[in-house]
Image 1 (cartoon, rainbow, N blue to C red):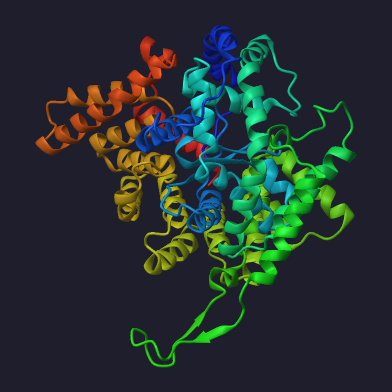
Image 2: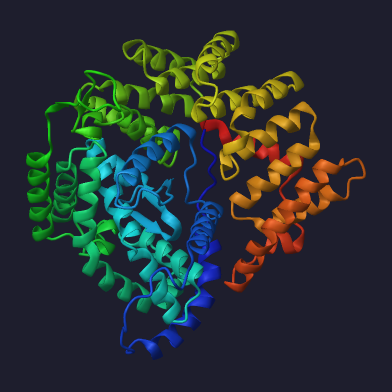
Length: 551
């Protein structure tokens, strides 16, 4: 499932332009002050860092940059959490999310929030290359490079959230094909000082992030050669692309400059790690704490390798990041004219056909690929969705119910089936969808796709209160906390609310209010909420259902 609206850069641009252009003047006055050392971790507590990271993600969602899809999200999170767990600070919490932009870019924000552009995955040939970039961003977090950057924003008198959002927007535009407008130019101008100081600072820390990141790659079970391979690929793109230096440089390189020295050092580290990696299996039969004869492999996670889903993920991203399904289909036709499509590309073509409404052809195409990879959960879920869209309801239900029997908490499976059920728009289907979603309730507080699915399922099953609460949570996670407050306060007016529902609503109002106040302090306001233009209830559910056609 993908719930995505067309990008609305004017939302962030209009908010950032005024605040940042003014702030840059104050920043310029302090730009010559000496750096008397870092107090990383003392200015912003871990809780405050996580709060700013969550706010950044929510506002990027509201602006239409984020690509939320259960299959892609599950794959990215699996890769990222492996690397985070293998980092120097495995206790650090990480949240990984995908942006739909085809520009090659990735970045880390406060609180361990790490984003990756679709374009970066499309440029990679294997998962190890993606892991190399992610491990580098993980290292920026664990080594507190991101936190020190936020401190610099504070010293420059820039609101932290606006500074982070502005830098992200500018980076997304850098090297892209957008001609921009006056408002965007104002944002970029106002961010000039911040960006320059950030880039200078980043250059001083790239080597450390490479060194720490490649070590986490190896511990996480990935081939450390992937980092150097991707660096070389990016450098090759710069040499072969046409245009002036800035337009031909991927956005990632404008904030993560790559030199021959960095590439050679990455190669040397990879070779060193390969040589140092133990491969023997040691017998520890003399250890009284372990069963007799037990063997322990000292190579640890290195044996795990890639997830096996990279090909499916890349091709699904190719379709979802295309301007239209028709464009994606044309891309596959062009590939096919050069050489036969591989299984992953055939899956992508079938998924593009599904997005274009060619449901029967899509189902047949996915079925052929799934038959060749019968153990792939990704393809099983995709086939179930394709069967439902092609009108094979009984077949889809049998497939989903069979998978759920063994894996009732598999997020992509649960969300995909819930959406299939919700599209039937009947009370019985809604009731079943609620039951399917219930096992995830305890872990889905910050899951936008879950909250939208749970809201819709309760809505069509007849539980308006639960639906209203979930729609409010979805609004909050989608960067609309003021609308969430309005929705919750409207729910409180119902005389039929029982004690428990009223207590839940009061607790959420108390929890969301500080976020609204902080956003206002940072200069971000929800004008729609102020004017009363709300997007809740049945109409909101219908709109969400329409946007979720990618499931």
